[in-house]
Length: 151
Image (cartoon, rainbow, N blue to C red; front, side, top):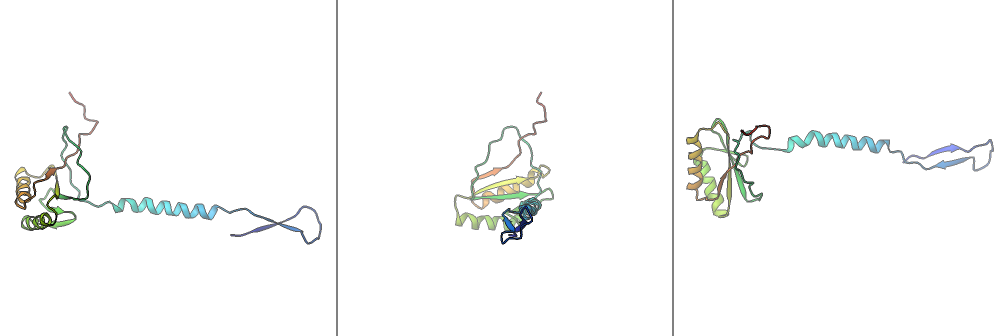
């Protein structure tokens, strides 16, 4: 912290010719805070991870419970399977889910399938999940956009 010493009024040449002025310079603090704000604004979108899947829209949806026990299984448009950031094929998916079920019998699986994935492929994924012994499975959809007018 710097201290500015201003000359006192008058032309006296005494020992108290200069009196200290105690003011805090906030400009460096504001500069640092703005730099930190910019850093957080830039890095926040980079922290979100996931698979780019266009979920189908349905009008009768119920919110899923938010818990840490659930696994998310993504089925992309080209048929690629991703289980919690790990890409798998159908055989590896069943084996991985069996291992997870043995460790945690109450595990839930949320399936996020692209709306353009064939129905048959989604049923193969569901068969693989149930073959692993997991019974708590839910499809994830999006609610319809509010701009769509109902007739």
